[in-house]
Each structure stands twice: as C-alpha cells, then as structure tokens.
Image (cartoon, rainbow, N blue to C red):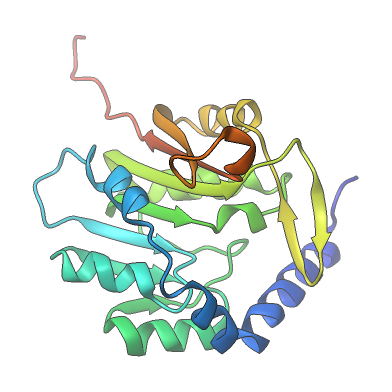
Length: 215
C-alpha cells in the first residue's frame, strides 16, 4: 500500500504525540539501559582523528547524547518530539535539532558518525531510501552510521499509537546497500542470549570515501 502525503503527516503527528505525552515515562523506562556496546560499535571504526562530530539521530531525552559529550566528542542531537528535545537539551547540555525524520534539514558532509539507536524503525519503508540517502549526505566521506532496530519479517504499520516497520537482516542490507553504504558489522542484542531472545538487530555501515584520481 502506498502512503500519500496525508498518511505520512498523520504517521508523524501521532507517533510524535505518543512520545510527547509519555516523555517522563519514556525517560524513566530507558535512562538506565546499557547501550555501551552500541556506542563502541559506532566509535570504533571511525577513522578521523577525535574528537568526532556525532549526530545522535532520535536522541530522545539525551541519555546517549550526554555520553558522547562526556567522551569528549562534539555531539548534536536530533529529535522530533518537542518534549523529549527539551529534556535532551537540559540533560546533556548539547545542541538538539528539533526535526521529524521525514523532514530532515542536515548539513552536508558534516558528521563523522551518525548514531541511530532505536529510531529508524519509525520510518515507513517507502520513505526509508530517501531518509538513508539524507543521512549518508550528512556524513563526511568515510563516516560511519550505526543503527539498531527491532527486527522482524517485513511487518509494518501501527503498534498502538506508534508507526513501526520491522526488517530482517537481508531487507536491512538491501536498504543500506541501495543507499550507498558498505557494511562493516552486524550483531543481535541483548548480547549473550539465544537468537530467539535477541529482538534487536544492530549494524554498522560506512559511507565510502571517493577514490583518488587515477585509481
């Protein structure tokens, strides 16, 4: 089914309203989550000299944004829910861009890394190629994108008051490759459990650097 402009506006409005209305509840339920494995997975393959310019895409209340800043990096958040964006600014002390995922306005070739932790699964499948291309354009050549999404087998639609899309590894690879990324790694979370108890698919991707002339 093709989503028209009105459908996409409704998806954005209702999903963001869900997070705005439950901002404090969301913060209480996620602030102690340990995503150090994911943060390391983003930072490790960045080849630029630190400190890095990091975009925390879908930064929520600012938990990971503050971590990146405390590690000495130049971290900027991006959040569509106004309540969460305000919380992130207050908690992290970092700049937070208030943009929804379907209307991005990002500087070109600016970031060494994009951290999309539990965020991109809210992008409808038909819009995902465009959004990934925009994130790729915002990365410097050789920059790295990390994503972590709840995995599935192509299910897409409303889950309560949030719109969500669930991809398996093959489908996610197809989206990322089509957007011009090179896969560096993937793994499932939480670590140390059988696959059927690991609902999260994490993956790491690089924006290729242009080849030198004559190569």
